[in-house]
Length: 51
Image (tube, rainbow, N blue to C red):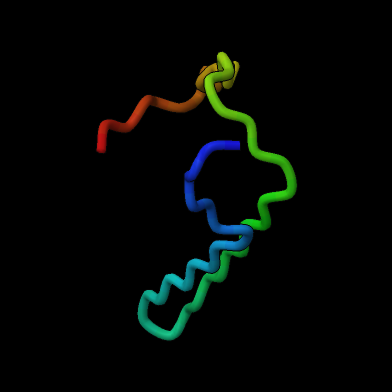
């Protein structure tokens, strides 16, 4: 492996008002230079949202 520094775990806390959402990402296997595909279609009763 090359000299990249990669975290094994990432924690995200998001607070809105009194509501707290927590996300914990644990990385078990990391591969570089791989083609990725995220097939997804928007349901017919929804519209795309641009951020």
